[in-house]
Length: 285
Image 1 (cartoon, rainbow, N blue to C red):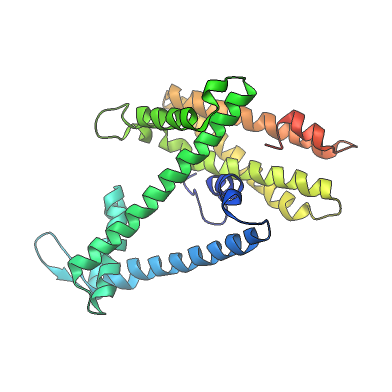
Image 2 (image 1 turned 135 degrees about the horizontal axis):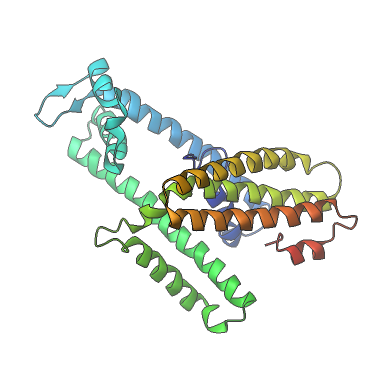
């Protein structure tokens, strides 16, 4: 499973429940921020499609200086998957296409490319900042539950998050690609987390009464089935490849998710459906 965003994302559910609520004045603001951000992200997606489509067709400069336009440029860029083999090759069409479009409005090509480079780098920067912050929350909460006070404060928790992430990134050398070892688990673990987020929301709506919980219960079941099936498929592939690191980590994630799902179902169908039951199962977190 390679889709890690789009209609639903586990990482985004952590952001929406962990960081965004701390940045709004009142709960009602979340509706404006949440729906507004989705509209803006949708608009951004349309602009990106224009850049990688029409923008590339305006001009595509090859290594030998040849400039292709129109269908020739499109065919050269997208005739095979080779053109999107590495990260830089995936980003290049966005940068080049956007620079071409800005050039039509009189912006020099070099300036357009620089602006888009900064624009894309800002996405990476804000994602890194948010990820470290969420990791700090997780570390602090775990440290509190495990009664490790020196690791619960924001400074030590943040340091732990940064050091462990850096250790993973540079585990394979100075190229900083160590985290790519876990990349095969990224998509599935993210979407499995999204399914668990829907599960938590379903329990909350169930306790509110009525049939409102069906709004999240149905997609929750769909996500749980698909992601669980995908995780099992991944584990079979990892076993066949004798990739014991991914087998261990993926298996651990799946077991924890299964544990949480079972306890959530028990809470859902319990006669009381009390908040206490959910808290004992760890679902309310």
